[in-house]
Figure 1 (cartoon, rainbow, N blue to C red):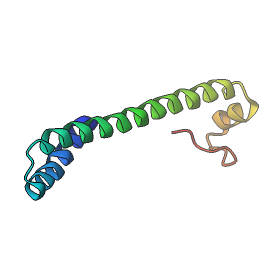
Figure 2 (figure 1 turned 180 degrees about the horizontal axis):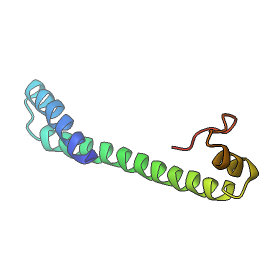
Figure 3 (figure 1 turned 30 degrees about the vertical axis):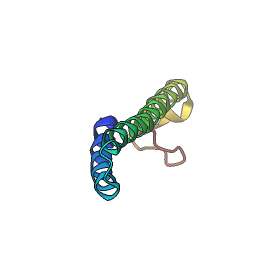
Figure 4 (figure 1 turned 45 degrees about the vertical axis):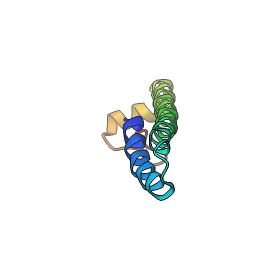
Length: 86
């Protein structure tokens, strides 16, 4: 997905720079570099996001035996002192 978006932006920028400098070789270079760079950035973001989700799910499992979570289940009211885990 990131490579497609980066390639689309690279094609727009590449066409503009190729017309301005009258060098057609700039078009594929711009498409490939923009697509690769934006794809890499999107990949890094998805890795961070998926790791963060695992961290929060592990914390939730560790806190499930806590007294506060048992009180929350019994009363039906959420404890506002704990931050929500999305």
